[in-house]
Image (cartoon, rainbow, N blue to C red; front, side, top):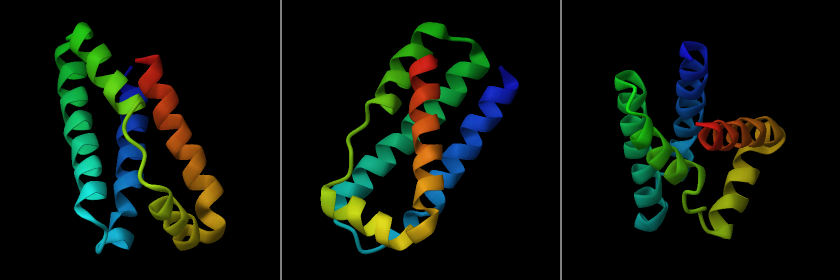
Length: 101
């Protein structure tokens, strides 16, 4: 369980490391990212306290979070270039691990 938590936290850090590329994004995108950040923080707390019902609820929100608008996704692809497939793989792993929780 600890290894999975560490991996989950690593993926979270990776996702938020690309945030500076969207410094001028509309408030909507930032609000989505802030909600995900808050949910991830709550998820870690619930895992540490072994609050399983809460883990399920928060993990579902993380797994099914709003997607950024197509324009933002296209900018992300352009910004990451050849690193995008690697990013997408990590993003998919976050989704899979959230569903597995």
